[in-house]
Length: 301
Image 1: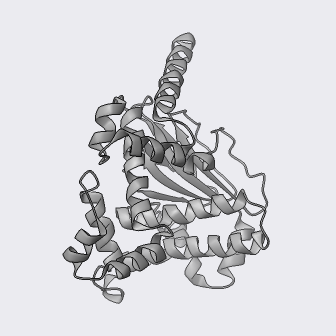
Image 2: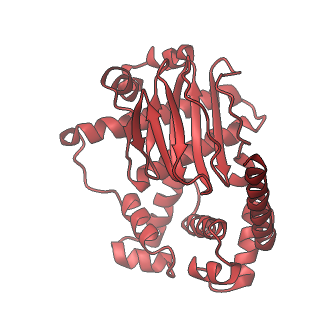
């Protein structure tokens, strides 16, 4: 569950690990940080909020799904036009030595980092499908770090290599479209259709008819790319929509219906299984956290 993968935010701006650190922050409001720079590389995945990133004195307004690459020694910080809006992002730090470990295998690991270092191209704007795929890779790494399984260290190295190569591949192929001019895959078409119709009933039979493929082929394609079934993916996306809407003040009854659920009992079971708490408890905790922050702000004022 992604709820279990979250990290409580601190303003620490140095690494405690020799190789990498990876954090998933999901805050109810924005906490400012001062301008700073690192001795390591930072990959920042912006998911939600009202954020501008100031890099080397230049202001870059961010949109959800943006990727920010910060090389060592570059001053940067995030600021918000509306600090009361929920703020969600993933932050990945890698030491120069750990990065060199991958670059020694292939220069293909270097493309986006060279763009940031030598051309000051810090911001990239992937489409939802690409961002979602990369985000899943992040969560897989975080999940692995929390386990104590055989082969943990080499497994994480492989996962990080896959993540870094995927980011570089996306940016390189976007910069060189003539070298990767391929039609959208079935998986891309499925994701796009689901996102555009997430609040409507969606069945595998309907998708099979629409895209002229068998149901088994759709199931295989989705499992291979997402690691979960089609039904599980749709359920997770609807639950995410519900949580985002409740954080913005929506009531439970109208919100779960607007997110594509037909009855409360099935919605309740899915929410409890995914997040470990009831929808009512989630709403109560969200309101409490918001009130505590407002009181804290007033006391500081």
